[in-house]
Image 1 (cartoon, rainbow, N blue to C red):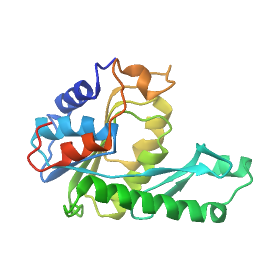
Image 2 (cartoon, rainbow, N blue to C red):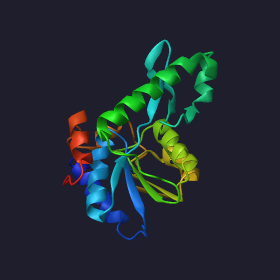
Image 3 (tube, rainbow, N blue to C red):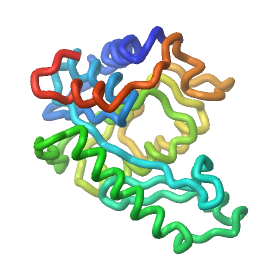
Image 4 (tube, helix red, strand yellow):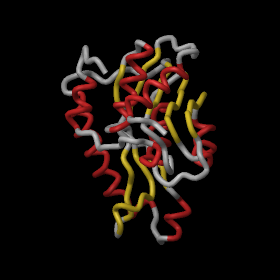
Length: 211
């Protein structure tokens, strides 16, 4: 059990401290993942930035995720679920484009005028506050590969074993502090899992911010 996201980030940083991290960059997934990532970046004296994958909801039920998309257009689909819902990728094309526009809006909101970091040839530590199904994280990971990241480390406080097994081939290394079989939601493993605001993310990304 983690006290809050700051506690989770500090504990992740302790586990990452022995890694060789030349020219590394920490990327947090907003909003809660950025709080965790900020602690990792602060403790390891590494730069912090963001990546903003978005889930793709079913047309008739937006809360039901049938896939995810990253800012570069990398799309992941739950093909088994699409078949059950009698959907194909063409049915979701308009929604995918809408989510990409939302990603661009959020990245501009969070970064302001800051130029996105170059990922080619770098070690990237992707951080979230936890992983459930893993679709948004998977979209982010594949977009990092497409961007030319040399080494990708996924660092999360908690995730179910089956999700970690699915993500393992996508990364060079996974650091996960807890992987319980009795997993219902990420929030069950935090004493304080209050929602973070856009302003929280903006403040953490501000140059010179002290996480």
